[in-house]
Length: 118
Image (cartoon, rainbow, N blue to C red):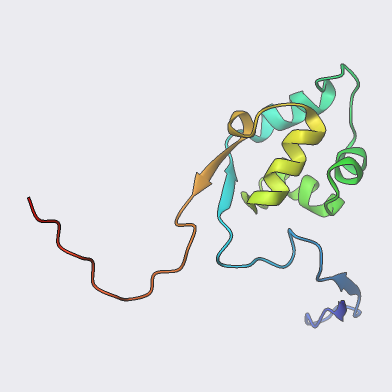
């Protein structure tokens, strides 16, 4: 599904809302990039030994190239779990080398916690 952007002083443009990194589901956990310079270094020499550009990594991982660029500049710090897995898979490293889970995976329901009896 495509949706037009409505930002002030900008020409409307279309954004693919089906892309996982653009349509965040609050029930999906976020993963924070641990070191953006490490991401850049790993892009220079992937698991296969071949370098990947921003667009190359985005294509291989199936995410928007803006997501990769924003992670590298620090403009974006976190992505949803499938995006983190896709980036790591495209580079050829384990998830926890580049990303760490951030926050809760599910929403707080507001129900009181059960007391633990000992």
